[in-house]
Image 1 (cartoon, rainbow, N blue to C red):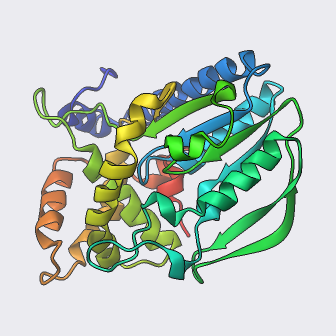
Image 2 (cartoon, one colour; image 1 turned 90 degrees about the horizontal axis):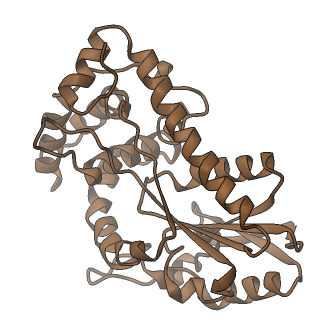
Length: 310
């Protein structure tokens, strides 16, 4: 059976034909080899690199990609330290607010920029830092005694939505930096002419993950999504051209996996919610897909970041 899947109809044929395991294997192997290739490029340039910046929009798979890249670099003999920009959030009461008076978590000044700059300068000069940890439940930073320094042959993998913004990347010598943009841009088409919205794709990833791991009701995802999108348009997408490499985390089969997980959540949204029309759009979209049980997703798939059972 054909495995060069271009449309939803062709994917559905593979699912109904009982050969979807082979398609999943091929998709996962292709993504793995992309990580190997990026790691090899970094390892080859390791003599002049110090800072690997990783950025992308919400639910693009930044966290899992960063971990995978660190593992592959280690396999190629390169040691790394992972730094999440989320841990440099200002305390909740200092977070900028949007025009509606709501906290604007996508704003770059939701990051404690002076504190981050001091830490990166110390690391660049060979000093140690105590890594902060941000407790989202309480909206405050804490310290756990995690001491970090960068040896001359070690790299810092710095991950966060603002990881390509020059206001942050300029804190260190850009000559020793490499920037990677992570997206979730499915190449699957609804038919031969209509593309699938990457925004809807990421929204479903986030909806499932936030419900499973953060205890967020689906109403919260629908309520926050417009501000998330506005923040991406302002703070993320304009800096995408600055990336040296791009990694697309979207898997050709994954919307069929998301379907049976997302549909009950979407259906639970009250009709009175402002996001009701968006919910109807998503349900109509998912109706085009045959489902795939999440048990078929490999344990090391980047998709597990969003569908893993709590």
